[in-house]
Structure formats: structure tokens, C-alpha cells
Amino acid sequence: MKQFLITVAGVLVGLLLAFVGVLFLVGGIIGGAMAPAPQPGQMVLTLDLRQPMTDQTPSNPFAAFFRHAGAAAGADPHR
Image (cartoon, rainbow, N blue to C red):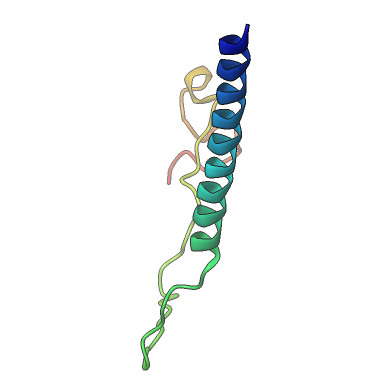
């Protein structure tokens, strides 16, 4: 019986240490991700607005049901 209690205590201590280790690991990952990236001393930012920018390519889920892919959205099929 004594050996059983020692084994149970060892398992509980091991689980506690593993849990604390995981907490430190997750905390380190989050802390590293929240730190700002180093910026160079001098930097120039440019923004070219001469061409249209889209966040996503437009897609029509109903394109298989229509002859022209844009017909369901009311788009000009001759474009």
C-alpha cells in the first residue's frame, strides 16, 4: 500500500510540474508574439494606389448554374 501511495504522489507531482511547464511555455510564446518587431532607424513607406486593390478575388458560388460566371451577380458578361 505504501508503494501505491508513493506512485500516486509521484504522478500528481509530475502532472503539476507538466502543467506549470506548459503554462510557462504558452506564456513565453504569447509574450514573444506581443513584443513589437524591431524597426530600423530610418524607413520610407510607400503606397501605390494607381491600380485597384482587392482583399479577395471575387468568386461566384452559383457560377456552375449559369452560362456566364458573372450573370448571377448582375455583372456585364461582355467584360
